[in-house]
Length: 277
Image 1: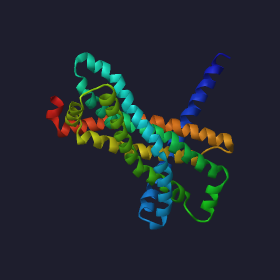
Image 2: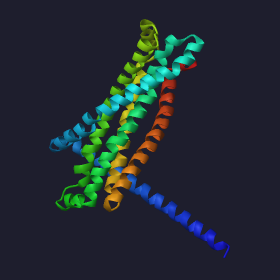
Image 3: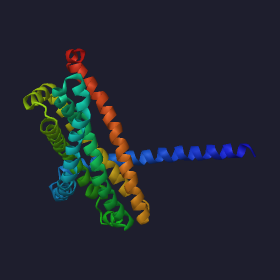
Image 4: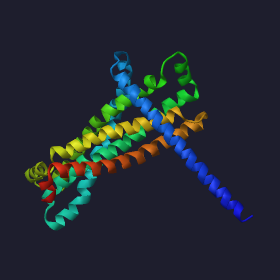
């Protein structure tokens, strides 16, 4: 009798591991099919109207959310960091701290998280509803690949527009930090921009843009997968939307960590003297 709970626990653990492996393989196969279909759709002019429509939904309609996010990130950073820098007598370097933080980390990550909530949820709900109402099967029954017709335009639009939205968030974050630092806290305008220009390099801006490509692919990939494999009913669609946001959020943070390590190694190999300094 004492061994029965242990056997049951091991059985549940083994079942969870097997299901995890199955889901991982299904997810990897779906992403491989999506990448192949996106490469094919990118060179097919007949799919361009579908891509333009998704660009409108994903890019243009996300501008207000990204604008608010970027602005408040810069303003909050200015208020939080000012006291520490002023205590050291280097408050004129506040622009370097704000701009580097916004361009390299906070801008891309927070903008991607907001897009995961707004864009990812919409993609999952749309495809999940189509799956529940058997519209995906209808597309397949007429001889059309649903991944190429439904997933590829969304993946391409998200992949290309996320870097532009991140640049927009970075710009507004810099503007928000400038407004608080110069107009509210009274930091010298010339010193603020002089130190900022000397501390922020093109490499730093390129890192944020490159992250946007990976973040966009992660958001579209996870959201479309959850939409295609959601359970039946309204509860299944709602659960898929929640899982898509959580999965995208975790994947964004994991990708950000990996890219930071990779970009640091690349920077150290190209400019080792700057690292030593």
